[in-house]
Length: 176
Image (cartoon, rainbow, N blue to C red; front, side, top):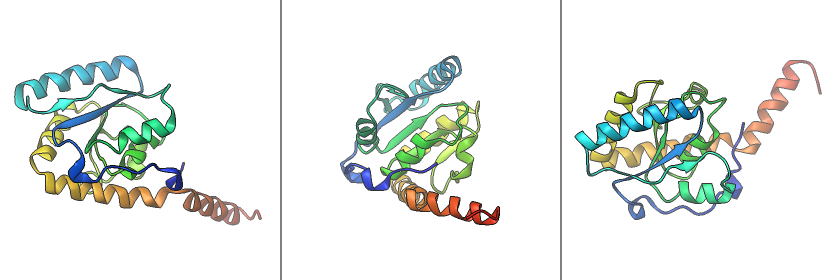
């Protein structure tokens, strides 16, 4: 999998993005997502009522450029997908400068380094996700560093790297 780094729309700079608003991403098994969503909302209402959750961004039916533009408007991107094949949208969120918070979706473990380029926990650890989100919002400087590390990680997943990896695979298999 790769992301098209050359087609990314411009994103807001970190200081221009709202400080206490999270962009949730609604994708995956609807029942599992809803259980995590409701529990997270409950935890935040009790422990961090200043954190606002934007209307969840749908995992389908949104034109890709519009999706990327939304990702570039928020500091925090919340993914509650229990499983992903790779987790392309969280990687795109990193590329657009957002801190990815939520579940690693199993597939995201390929590029996600918790505490370095994202703030994730395995499903179903929603209490851990809530804690990560609250902590990030209380330490904007650390969150900005994680977002920058995420952008660096995402830059390694463009088409050129993808193409080169496949060429190396074919060479290793003796194909030309």
